[in-house]
Figure 1: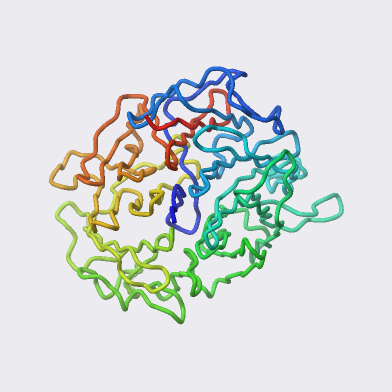
Figure 2: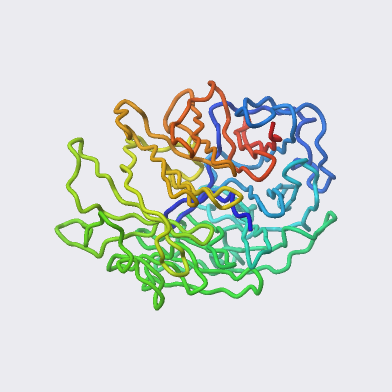
Length: 474
């Protein structure tokens, strides 16, 4: 089965990068096929395409565009998802207080179906002068369950808030099958409300929903330094909540949640423990600060049934103060190590802003549609060949080389990324076969998703919102 295109943060909170934000697109009205003003239209691409500079593997003159002008700069997520097996792209369009999920064929841009209107829970941010009944920011994620793909539209807000009631903080998830639908008012398979629990009032923190693995949508939120999670079975609607005692839930496996317990280490309770499969070069313990030590090993993300983990090295720090940390890729069900490699930690020194990532973090994962290639931030894994390309600063004896972060990877092993903090933004292309990056021409956008036959690009629109663009392979 092809999996991929899903890019997530490797910590509890996840978000999607807006690729190539250095060159804002400014489509005219004709380019905005099926935009917020006509959410239930047929949405067939009309008029001129937005001018994008794309990598050589894609044709800038063949494709489609969709404007999402309602998305605020700095929004927590980009409301776009790709289901690679069905070759579809979903996004959330807004029409006043109502929202719709619309799904296109990724390669042609043909609109396949549009959901019935959905009114998400009210906004949490009424203290800043916003109407609490206003539409809360919404997003969508793709979830694979037993070989079938689902789109889950979701929003974090207050349910039942009015003049006499405080309301209840929830994440509302609306589940649709990615394939088999048609028409302009498709009803969801189910709507699920997940209580967002917090010890002190509302969490009001970063909340996100993503494909957690094992056919479940993972809902994650933070309250101060505490992490909380719940899992939604997309086929049944069953919700499983995980309290603070579970540790940090990174993802799900067929045998239970993959967690980082408070005592260190990681694994699936009752099934496998990371310390039992520690790689060569890893220390027995890792520092927790203030002179305390914890069991070594930290799971950083779960994607496509695989866990990417970090290990403190047994050797001393290098002369420049960085450490060649050990990272492993494990089978999520068994803990078996599929690949192990040393790679220097990224040495990024500045905060990421909205030009680099929507949510402010940078550690993303991407999987090629055929499942052979997996990227984690600045690392590109070839799971078939067993090789790793490390794109951290100064690796490979090139002491002047900058850090690079990977956005997406194609079936042929070509990865695309950027040099964070670069102005103008520097886009790079990295073939997995060599691991040697190449700078692309100034202004080049990189695809956020790479389903077969097309690249999906996300760019800021001049004046507000984002543009979703499909460009066919050359």
